[in-house]
Length: 101
Image 1 (cartoon, rainbow, N blue to C red):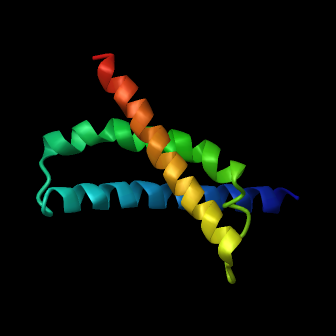
Image 2 (cartoon, rainbow, N blue to C red; image 1 turned 120 degrees about the vertical axis):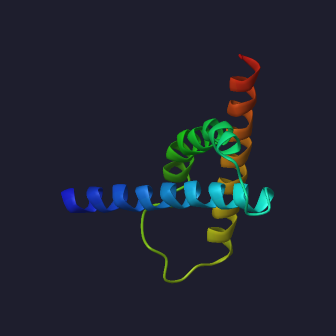
């Protein structure tokens, strides 16, 4: 039981790491592979919001239970739903954060 719980947390950590990596790759592409330190620092609240939303959404949709060997349309729909919810949630949180400044 304990090793199964540890495995779930490891899979969640891997998913969250991929979210961070994808966010920074998107930043690199947005700025023609030449981002400045100011742009990267300004981007950190969005990455933090993505992680906060991802911690809730990924387990809620059951995406971190097992490593996939086979997948079908229901799996693709859950992943698409998670990506959309994480992006919308992170955008809303970051918008609210920036409006407080």
